[in-house]
Length: 357
DNA sequence: GGTAGACCTGGACGC
DNA sequence: GCGTCCAGGTCTACC
Image (cartoon, rainbow, N blue to C red):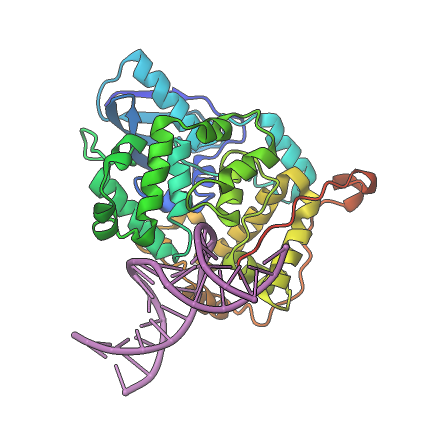
């Protein structure tokens, strides 16, 4: 099997950094617990290739990318870029160091990189399919989108549908075969915007776009509200805003010990992480992720079809009860000392989020 | 600016 | 096995 390798930073761990965000459980991604490898198919221009990404034991070892067919030098270069995006190896190392400086809780384990998709389009659709639906529904929608509209590599691995393919798909097909429900027209409209590279998409893809304009532009996309906009921002490497949802409320109640209405708790969660400023999302996310791992075991042991579908409100409640978490205990995370992380004379308040009822 | 209700699917639960 | 209820974020109409 042809292969190539990708150099990694000294502390890089594939298992830790792939299994750092729920999208590693969504098709076409397939994490092998046994092999500790990630496989899927990638679209290289007009061609498809299946990849199996693995890392020899030991942090910082180069990543090995196995391919299911020979590729040209140009195709290899595209695959290399797509994989680097997924693994956030394209993110500046200085950002990782800055994050650990602001929130040293994650320095020892090295957590900083959040898994994402090879393309912004896939990230946006994964966000849309995670809105107003429980996690097993999101798993299902992504699996069916890949099966119905995706393409197969020589070894049978699936790609995520391209914007062009989805733009051509009938709403009825998405609704009945992919079970996306009322999201059908929104998905097609988004696919058309990406396929035509509308001005909004160019603004979003432009790394020099200021956060406020990016947020505003994301909110103008069909199916994108405050939660989705903030989530897409973190997927673009802009970590200042929190995608607050029912999980945030659960975290606020069960881990941070907050009481009150959902709205009040969301506001307090927002205020709690505000001192982390441009790193707020990563502090928030790893705190939640560690809580999930406490309930379900290390993420690199999660199977897409078993553990991966366990994330329902009632399952989490049962697990929390079984873990003996008991009544919520007030908890103050060892965050940044306010004087260092947010000098009083340098306060930058993120815009208040419009939170769902 | 804030809020209520519809949107759609699948899991949970009671019978 | 069937019926009902509920969870989930966005969008629109309305106040």
